[in-house]
Image 1 (tube, rainbow, N blue to C red):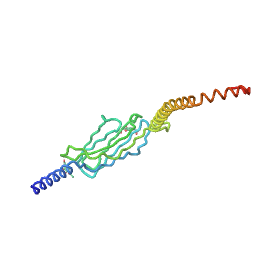
Image 2: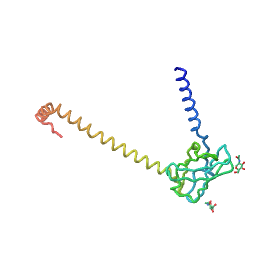
Image 3: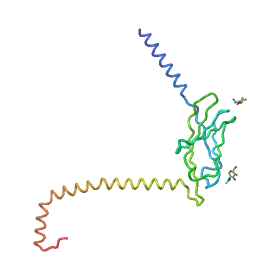
Image 4: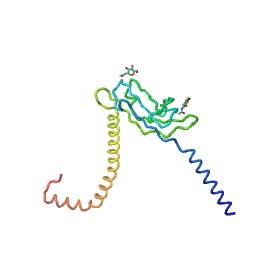
Length: 183
Ligand SMILES: *[C@@H]1O[C@H](CO)[C@@H](O)[C@H](O)[C@H]1NC(C)=O
Ligand SMILES: *[C@@H]1O[C@H](CO)[C@@H](O)[C@H](O)[C@H]1NC(C)=O
């Protein structure tokens, strides 16, 4: 009975292990930008994806655009994706992956590559996006603070009013008796 249970358990573990092994993805490729990842408006850039295998299919994806997908087969270890006539909208975060022949699964994704397209006046597009985000964040934060501050100030005011209304009227009386102007 126990041996039967143990062998079943072992079988389950072995199957689980095998399943895990099958799901283990291929090691991630590396992605680089040529000549560099900060490029001028209307220029070209080559995104190069490299892996340890030969005869693979590479894909290039973009984090901000799930519909963006370029696929290229290569007999070598790498593939070059040429992006031409770059516009600010081409800026963003790119990644690549590959699959070996006979496999339907993509490898693990490469490290992210940040492509920055400058507008020709040396103002990187990404930094203006960053500034925008910062402004939005600051505004939201201020609004939140004001929103929280108002009720608490009101509450404190109500409490002190309630507590000192009696006192205050006495004080006023004394003060006016001494003819000290109230403001
Ligand atoms: C971009 O590449 C195309 C095709 O290779 C070429 O005609 C064009 O001159 C290149 N543009 C720049 C700015 O290098
Ligand atoms: C790559 O594919 C070609 C033809 O499909 C084949 O002749 C070659 O041996 C393959 N290379 C490797 C390393 O698998």
